Amino acid sequence: MRYVSTRGTEPDSGLPFCDILLDGLAPDGGLYLPEHYPSLTAETLRRWRSLLQSDGYPAVAFEVLSLFVDDIPDADLRAICERAYSTDVFGDPVVPVLPLSDDIWLAKLSEGPTAAFKDMAMQLLGQFFEYELARRGQTLTILGATSGDTGSAAEYAMRGRHGVTVFMLSPQGRMSPFQQAQMFSLDDPRIVNLAVEGVFDDCQDLVKAVMGDAAFKAAHHLGAVNSINWARVVAQVVYYVVSYLRVTTALDASGEAASRVSFAVPTGNFGNICAAHVAREMGLPIDTLILATNENNVLDEFFRTGVYRVRAGAEETSSPSMDISKASNFERFVYDLLGRDGARVADLFTRQLPEQGLIDLSGTPEFATIRERYGFVSGTSTHADRLATIRKVEASDGVVIDPHSADAVKVAGDLRDSIAGPIIVTETALPVKFSATIVEALGHEPERPDAFVGIEDLPRQVTEIPADAELLKRIIEEHR
Image 1 (tube, rainbow, N blue to C red):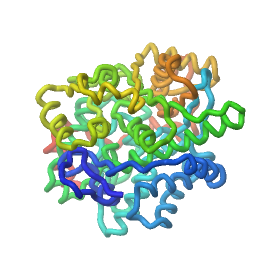
Image 2: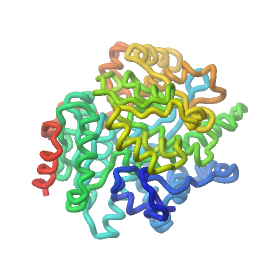
Image 3: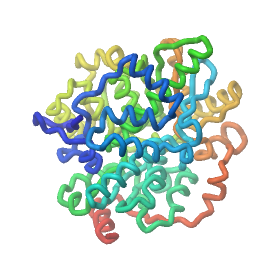
Image 4: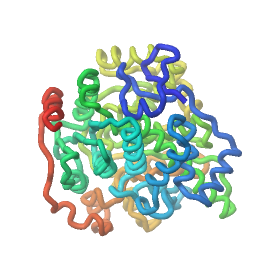
């Protein structure tokens, strides 16, 4: 398997997995995707179902990843999966599913060390980085941006990894107190937290600006943990496969067999639902991909109208991990949508978007078939919707969900009549990460795991900086 840039125009320019693992962003500014998606068969899914029941999540992770990774020996890749997805890290089973009312299921993705779905990819990424850096005798400086959960998941996955230093940017005051505490309480000289004046999009722009300086990137061995890194996306493909297998197995056992499912995914940066798109392209029996946004509804607007219109800034909401107005993974989907025409994608993202502030595909034949061909529908949720949904799910099912998952449940409910069969909601985080919203909705604090008691009272390790790419470069240089 080789990988190409979404903006690439040269034939036979593919790179192996481990090269793009360390690169993150392609030199032309595009994002890496495999030259083709592997194809799943019914027999493969039957075999994986049996394997999941006998050997668990790591075994299925190896099977899925081996379709995309051919430059790591099988024995090593299997060991990487077993370390990343140990039940000591995620509990047993890894990614359980929970039935809710109205044939909706919750894929429990937040049982990892930072109580967020990002752990599912970051723990694997940490293992990949350590393995490949040791194999090459190199070091890596990770530069990332977070709107909430990516930062802590990355830092917990990378701390103590030989040869790895992390610089993580976050928007000042825009994360929940719990999210801030998770990141800023880490006291490790190789973990550097930088709170940026502005919003998440400013942080993301800084990462792209510094990564775009090829000489600086090479000199400091810069790599990415944001979902611009393909390894993050392919790791997430695994839990779509596992969630499908778990739900259909449970339904078979109850006599309510289902051959296809739909997924409802809360998203701001298009990374999580991009993985669902890849799984569907591979042939995982997914009927509909329900894209749920909050008030920052750039993606919902595109899937309804065909116009991708970047906002001047992201609105601050009670589902802050989705407070994003520039969806960096969206380019991957556009590449597929436009028949993998790298020149056309490059023109859209390097000329049309900067000049006009939007990409308009509304009148194209590709957009006309977006629901039928790719299965996408979308919707938006508000703060009032989140509160009402959290109350409703607790009342009907005795389950407390976080505000981002509530966005997905709400949108799935809005579209329920047009979608047959089970809908799986991909959980974003444990409710404890957003206590203020839970208290507002339910009148009581959410359950807090013992590992997180008192975390907000720990000393903070963070430096506040303006949104200045040159200053960021100096900080990276001075830390060496």
